[in-house]
Image 1 (cartoon, helix red, strand yellow):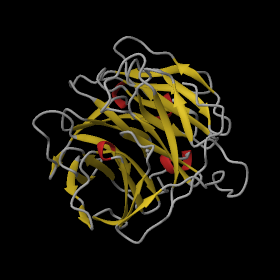
Image 2 (cartoon, one colour):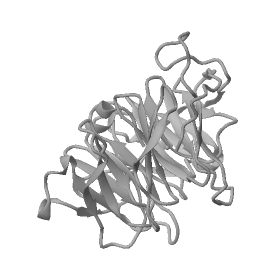
Image 3 (tube, helix red, strand yellow):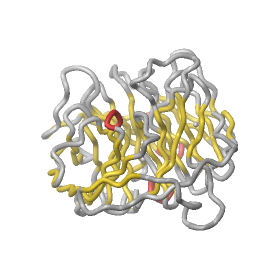
Image 4 (tube, one colour):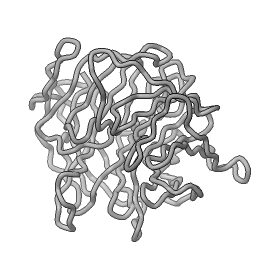
Length: 334
């Protein structure tokens, strides 16, 4: 899912909601372990990038019934979080926890994966609604809405080259739309079928999170039920299985965040973030460590800011009601 504008808008650069509580939460530190080990967060971590300074919140309560799914962070300390309940999007100041709605929800709407570009445009995956929306965060107005003809579940998004790329969890196809909101017509929405070694599950979710390779020449997609990572040629849709080393699979893989040659894989129902080192072309992924935290409650997507990874807890194991509580949490990258 996501990262600073420089991470998400240039394919060769390091790479992936609601009142965020104004009260500062306990800060935390991460004990980094050897390759393949597990690190668990504790409560002694300072402000992102400035250890020892007054801390920013690391645990953010969200509105009851919000059902968070996607999160994106830009160059400023602001997080955008989307709702599965109605497709609304909120903007939160990571320094203070103050937040407000920037895109109102609607019946039947959903906001899954989010990515924020350097020009302030936020690309929103519409989940079960099947839509793709582009929100100008400077004006809080939609600049474009796309509706693919293929039935499916538009799940996650990454910015690559001059286009935004979206996964469809219910069909072996990627969608892509132009960045900048300037081009329409035949250069608007495109579909790229997935082929090669791609494996589509007969029912339910298949393609989920999406990222770019370290060399900036291809995309990375996680297949959640199979627990596999695939390298995908965006021109042809040809997919190649990425060889995992040190881990048998990444089952329940959801949001992806790449920082340099490190790929952070959020494994939602496992309450785990697995960190792999990629070779430049993403042919292999070697397990380096895992991140756990007692506050994880089925985290789905993540976004980086400074030396922290921010995640939203979707709480899929808890029946959603208008009174169900939700939150987002932050953990150190290292």
